[in-house]
Image (tube, rainbow, N blue to C red; front, side, top):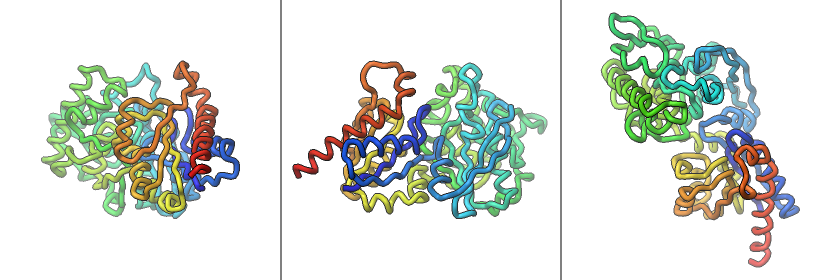
Length: 380
């Protein structure tokens, strides 16, 4: 019996690597001698760079770049083990975790630092670039990123408008004549953890703006701003990208990467699986144990867990998912092949308490899964 342990991070408490270790330790306690294969995963959100770098034997390089509110932040650039592919994790430079809750402001937050990381990668000679776009504090359509690489976003009189999402309502023209020429030599993949379009009720502003601190009125402002960006982009650069899956990722950074850098959006979870050898490990597995911080209706839209479920289902391999919280919406995953889902919460407790004890709680729940599997296998 081989169990493939393949979780994503438990956001705010455990990295994917820590979650995998907790699960493996629990399985070993519940079924001594059970063989486990560990493959921490990610889907384009926070932690993607770490997963890819560690799985491929790569390295990280530190830089100081512009943070989401314009202040300097430390960010890592990941170089994969092949020595030619780099990972830019936008959360490192433009992520929500970089902004205290009381200062979150998607009207003004910028992706400029993400563009600076791409520029550093180009400076070092890298031309194969993966941009992981989850976990953003921004809603600027990727314009800050593009500015860092030479793009200009002009208002009335040809004056450059300020960074941020809200100023895009004043956009009149986009000038890419000074865009870094090395972009034409680069192959840029956008690792998306969502498939949202740029605009509309499922778009960047409506769905994710409130998570970044936007009020209902500010969501309307941001929607109008991105609509204006899409309109001017269609005229000055390339039309039709606002409806592409993933264009709404990271406050429209997906849109900006596709429109201004010619990037291709790819499902982040499958990209990570391919680069980390997940599929080879899956062929050896009799069961998969996966998980993430919260299983809900959003899980079904390209996240790690649903992708694991779908890939295992193609091979008739049962999948058990563990999470800090399992909502009713998560059980729709059964129709896509999920065997069972369990919350690791021990009972009534605060979120803070559960997150502080998450390693032990995850380990304990994995142990119980092992006890159960062991009995059924023994009686089969």
